[in-house]
Image (cartoon, rainbow, N blue to C red):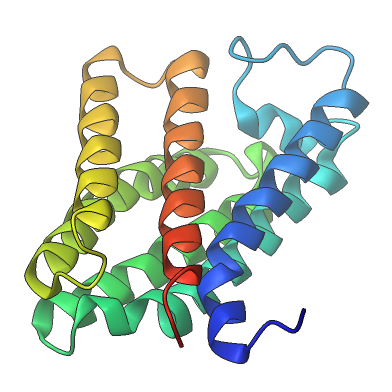
Length: 189
């Protein structure tokens, strides 16, 4: 079965999420001291599994940029909301990549970039949600997935930046990317 170019770009969000998960699991398995939900994910970026974790962020970020520009942008419309949603997704991906470049060893810049990534991505999901509501391009599926992921992310905010909250927020973003990318892939070219 041959995947068309359109389907490839629509699936790039799924590819990014899966690549992230596989490399994240590899990084965890390489670091004996890492405990899921008890350590910050970024702890893996300076451990024995650093190559895998930092690669996860970079690969996922590059694929999410492709997903934003060539996979989802058409579904958001040509208006200001669509352009803003696409641009904000690209910014989220660039922030993700920057977390791999400026690891915990880089000091305060890492923390600033991490917080910026989570907050900016939360707002991005809201803008994408608005774009999908306006275009109706994914029917109810897109807005329902976006609203659910946005609501979950907002519910996490009062609990602060603990390792467990960070892990849940990342998983929320990954699930969002998988579901939206898979729904796009099911659309006709």
